[in-house]
Image 1 (cartoon, rainbow, N blue to C red):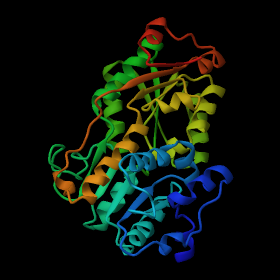
Image 2: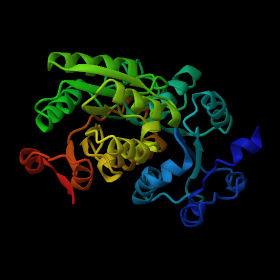
Image 3: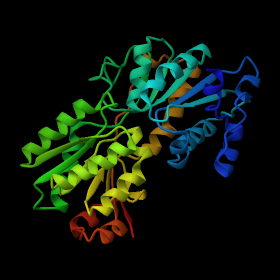
Image 4: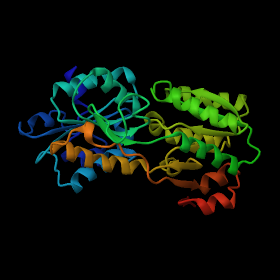
Length: 337
């Protein structure tokens, strides 16, 4: 068990090696650190490769550096990756708790849910909390109570905007596919919200669930059979890991698609609308800093998105033979030519 867990330890000192040679640091390096250093755990639902390629891990590290933290000098960083396998999370949580970390940075709704089920009291900083109050992690956004705080990512207003954008892009849209992950505890509620919004807009929804790469392929095959005209992808750590697969399948089927984060357009998706998730990872370091300095997580307000952006990939539009309305191009914050 120890050997399996150790190979997912990344220390800051070895990140350059991981980036340059696709190799991890010495798995025992974390235990060689001075015993009096405060420990910060980074628990990521998807794969190590996804965390590195998406730059989410690096942006958190950058946030720590900006606040004067150096791994191995004034704090000790431990990273664990669940490889998008929910069944791995209880063991990873147990391992992190045994290490007596001071704070846990949690990425992905399944990670947050696993930490909550563990019943531990270690402070948890969420990087992408979907609905902390509705899901029971916080009493309120202003004063969460308990040991969870951090950053929230989504609300019904954003989902309504997703449907509006697709209706603007496709005025004759009538069948909307929704890709969701049943392994994500927040997705059933989000799915119902999107369904209600789609129905209000006069759209028939095609619900497609996927928790593996193969299931994503099957989902796209079903979209073809159901004659879906556009796709909304619900935010999910596993879908971030598979963004390029989703974008490639959307392009292959000439299906206009929208994801709830602008990074999707960078990966080849047609439209990305939402907050800059990378900023959340950098801002998570601010919460870690405050907690390490004595702040109680239950007294730190949970941040909601204050700015959302629209990104459009015109390369993808040309590849699928789709003419993006000038109205959308003028509204875009980022246009990929």
